Image (tube, rainbow, N blue to C red; front, side, top):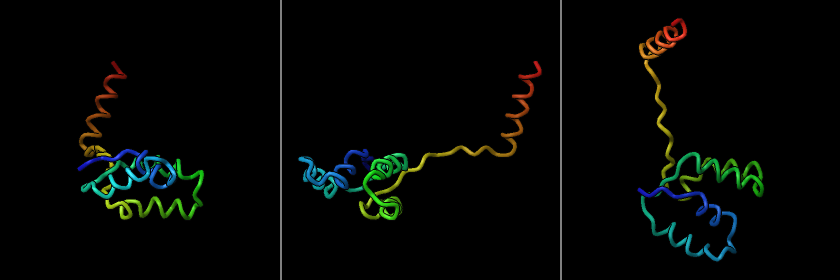
Length: 98
C-alpha cells in the first residue's frame, strides 16, 4: 500500500492547468492499493474550502475514498481499560502527595 500526500490531490482537483496534472492522473490511475491519512483529507478539504461550496466540500469529504479508490487511514487511539485508568490516577495522586 502506498500513502499519497495532499499535493497530488490538490493538483488533480484544483489545478487542471498545472503542467504536472497529466503525470498526476497517470500516476493515480496506475497506482493500486492507495491510501491517505484522515489528516491529509482534512488538509485537502481546508485548501479546497476557498473554492468549493459547502455542498461540494461535504461531497469531497464523504466520497473521496470512493472517487480515488483508496483507503483512509485513521490513527490508533489507545483507550485504557478501567483498571489502567485507576492505576494511572492512583500513581498520579501518589506523586502529588509525596
